Length: 281
Length: 254
Image 1: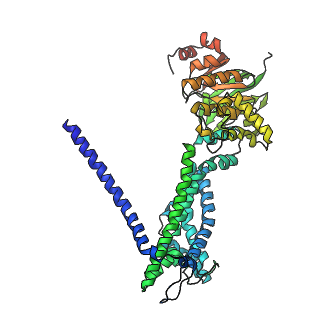
Image 2: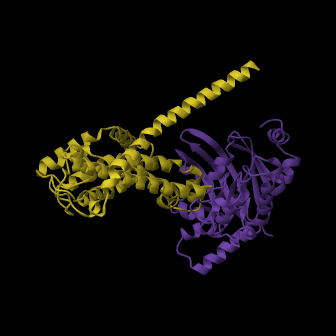
Image 3: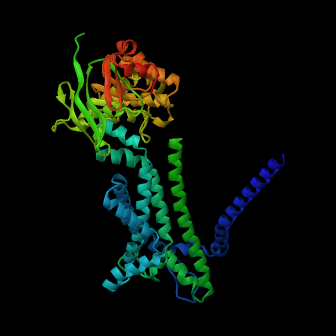
């Protein structure tokens, strides 16, 4: 009798601790979102999305150049990062024992743990210092470098989750190896790979350090990716550290837009996964 | 009916690297018969089955010596394409393996589409015929476009059989096809196997001795990589020649 009461108390205590941990984990996110909405939503206007920044001291203007810049830089990075990452992931999953696969896997894990500023410095040395010119393209290269190992490892893990029996069933039907890999195995893993890719795009969309050293930022609207380019994280950084009250409000609003972009990507990722689960259930 | 040998092995030995899994097995399988392979776990019967459609060589370090003859021709000859061969010798596995991203219809059509671009009406005909042969048509005819994963385990296994039948193979290999099914599902598969021998030659690996006795014409008993005894099922179960066979079928080991 006593033991049962004790067990219940210990159980309740442990559940309580876990709930506490969950609250501690989620609370910062809630505060960040609330704070951004309170301080940033007021500055959101149509002009904010359609106009470029005005000189300091003047009011009005927007961050259209930074929004377009982020889309261009991240889009270009994804155009390179997703195919290369998925391709390398397929290779590592198809030939798991190959020496090259083991080496690639190890290097990708190292890259995943590399601070993004290091990648920024690397891209600066490799591209910016050599051509003596900051550019959006250099920023895309840095972001692609961050993205490839992430996409690669997720792709590999998801392909390896596909049961071996499925591969055998296709081969026993007379499927050639390449068609088994693409039409059966990769196709089965595809929703997860889409999710993983979207999440890594969301991850790099918020990167600031590599862009400071490569894309630099710009006050002007530009679609030329070979020129210095504005991006939302750079705008947030520049305006938040600036001296003007107006700039600070803009920084909050830009941060809100940035987190909304990332949130949308994450939601899309959830949607892609959700479809897979209903299909399997 | 005149007896023709559909499939035969001659001194077949299957290896994994340096490990011998099947040793020196010679069996013949007559056309339009059901042939059971029985024996305790790890006796080599599944490995033997996988040498018959060249799936064994896909296992890590899998290789063979000896010969496997389909209609008198060596399937391991260098001019034989394993892909083409596997369309002539189909295989069904222990666990149902419907392709999860495909509909019921596309699952059955998969083996035909990999072999070319069949026309719509031809495909419709083959899919319907194969599903009817697999005794699944009535259950799925209204949801051909639905996901194959929505079917029950037994239905999924019959779908896999339909998928194997669709390219019209000569031989069907079944690797413990009822091991993951309930008694009802098992019975339907057994009835199916019995009916299918009119058109196909069947080799079935089973752990279930009653199943071997119920469905097969011949039975071969495997033990520790060797084929101990092969013969007509009735003879093997009533008057086995080998002491080890008798011990196994009477439940004294394995």
